[in-house]
Length: 171
Image (cartoon, rainbow, N blue to C red):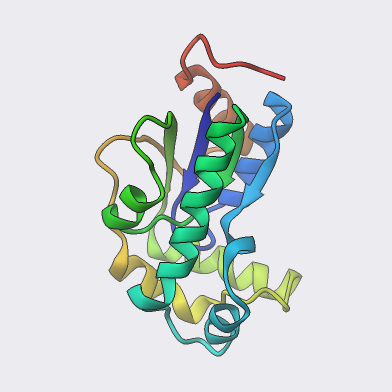
């Protein structure tokens, strides 16, 4: 049982990389955005950054999901911003193996991606106007596989696969 947590700011490619990795591993892919309340989504859609208080129920629900996956011995690829060290601690119960992968990019690279996403998917709730607030909140992880968002997706997937413990089950 392993959880691969693909983290980074909005627009860094968490969903794209996570889905590609999940296909390779034959594991389920879960996007942490599915755990946001309608109120949080509405707030972000209005261009308002979430506060730590806004995020608490979301973090609690994510933690409960991680505990459930662990209890059921399910391997999962999870895309989650996990911007702060305290958030990562909250969603990482002791004894649960989580492989952290951090997608790292510059403001301008990610801004371009968010602008493109807004054109391709205008209903997405996370717009480019929230990027700076995410970068302001970001605390880079101490222990993670760091991947540049400039790498091709397939190269990122291969690097993640090589970083996983040899005992990682592939379904």
